[in-house]
Length: 206
Image (cartoon, rainbow, N blue to C red; front, top):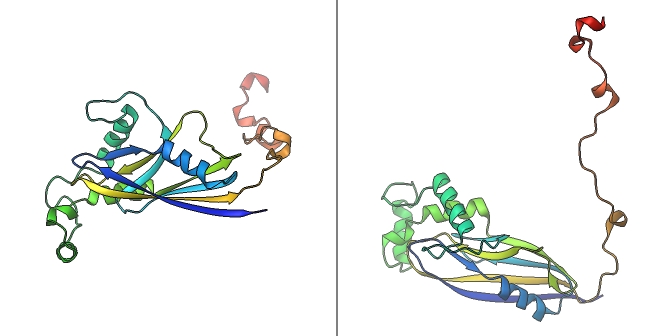
């Protein structure tokens, strides 16, 4: 059985001033198809520490901020949990040493390090997602889309998304576990848990 690894890099441009949600579903599907992998996984990973990857339903409706409604709902929640960095000193980071490092690597100004909100949001969401490939098709269910989220809205940025496809070029004959029977994970009460408790028995029964 042949095992194959196939890697591609997606180049993206974020707009700044508000977090950018890039729908990269069609690109991921094309990469999976071009890889030749029939059964395996695809890892979709951000190259950046202020960005995340999310698998979620497409909300279809788009508002005047060019965000899908579900994306803006998510942003509203994140702003409550992790407010936008709008005033110097809103967060401890960046400190003076980090700001000096930014100048050393030729950042255009100290303001570019005032993206602490983006770093923290990325920590919550993580920087990657792994999806299953079945019979050469990305297994996202009926509604799933793949989004690359750039939480850093300090300025417009060039971004990179890394895609690694791994798996076999051979078919998988039967992937049903336990003949496809539904796994019952609901709690089962023991006889002891179901036994009558005299403390709850009405007096007229005595």
